[in-house]
Image 1 (cartoon, rainbow, N blue to C red):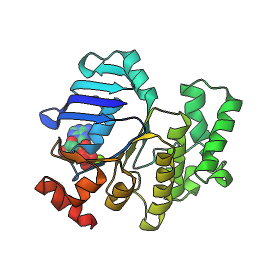
Image 2 (image 1 turned 45 degrees about the vertical axis):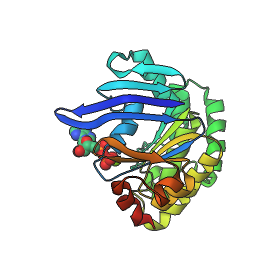
Image 3 (image 1 turned 180 degrees about the horizontal axis):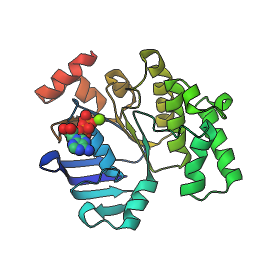
Image 4 (image 1 turned 90 degrees about the vertical axis):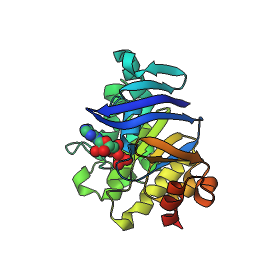
Length: 243
Ligand code: ADP
Ligand code: MG
């Protein structure tokens, strides 16, 4: 479903992704762990060209893109095939909950407003926000805002969902409601990459764990391997915090 080959990213002289190779099978959930500054966000953002990588290959659902030679059409196709959920929600403050979810459907996918409305309402029901359709983001809790963020991504039915620390901005008592929605989305068979510091959650939800440090994938394996029998000492130290 996703294949990354020799992905490099420089910010000026700063080498932030140092040759990332990663394969993700359809329907799998991959949790990306690692210390702050290791390149996790940059990796996610490079997949949909929010932050274009410097070199390498990105393949999503059979469409191979050489990042150094990517056409506008290829970049647009990658963006449509991926849905992103941000740490800071990134909702439109001047739009209601329903409008925030509908806008991608009407503006990007050119779905007619009636159908967009129906689709959006049913997805908002799924994330438990059916009674908040006409509220503005500022009148919602952080957990509710992030559930809108997830609904917005789901509405576009992307091939891959990318979550960048979806619960890091939330007060502790609001984390669980968002994790439960993410878990539900995972159970529905979506292919997902999740950057998270919620180690226990990663262990429960992920089919595959990727541990990154200093722009490299240090180790990858199943949750059981990574949490109970990591090969690398750095991984061992990092996951020991979860036990
Ligand atoms: P993580 O998400 O693992 O904390 P990031 O991908 O955000 O790490 O950052 C990796 C490195 O790239 C850090 O050293 C960070 O300072 C740097 N970096 C991230 N975004 C930018 C940017 N827009 N411009 C310059 N440097 C950046
Ligand atoms: Mg980050």
